[in-house]
Image (cartoon, rainbow, N blue to C red; front, side, top):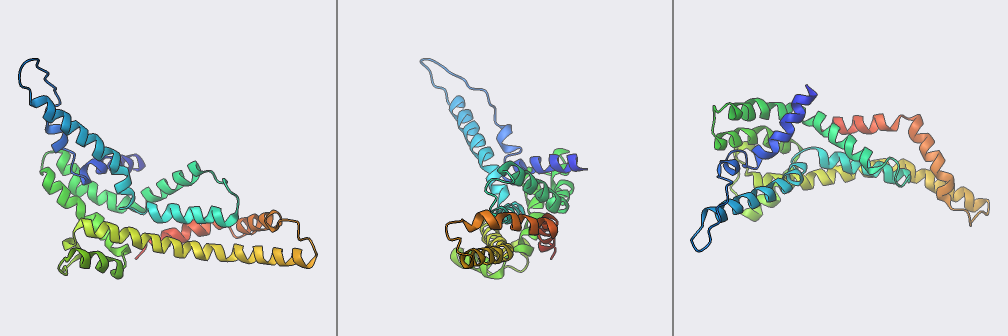
Length: 249
């Protein structure tokens, strides 16, 4: 099941950006003629260049359309509030964020796979129809997590008429509105994570000042206490639980 969802997630990159059939439909052959006129090679080279450009941007675009942004920012706040610098390493945080994203997005990706990807691969629908069907589950997920204030910001700028349903919202409006909503939510959660560790730092600093140990860095003393507190309350479980709960609307 996980392997199937992972395959769907990778194939979705090409499908959502509209490069699945159109890019590979062009003839990649390059004809070079000396003393003559050759136009096919130039057109094919341009198609390949555009294909490579879109493929390089696909991961960055899809990151803003999934739960990855909120998850990776919150995990970064956890490491910063603990003050452990590079522990856990970036590779661990990114890997955990990717798998949590796959877990959170699995219902949405399953809908995209069943409604758009599989019919398109079987030749039952065209690329345009597949893109239209794939947008619906993604729009539904993003709309539920987007604040109305952020959505109105981009709709007013583009002078978009008030849509009747979320399906009528243009994807170019919904994606940036969803992105800034995710940033605000992630920073709100990060602030709540910072508070208990900040209290520990203040208590340790006040204690050292009262004892006259002004030359001793408070971080050296507070770090073990923060790690101990985080372990005793099962911090990683609570953080992941809060992330998963925040996407249930």
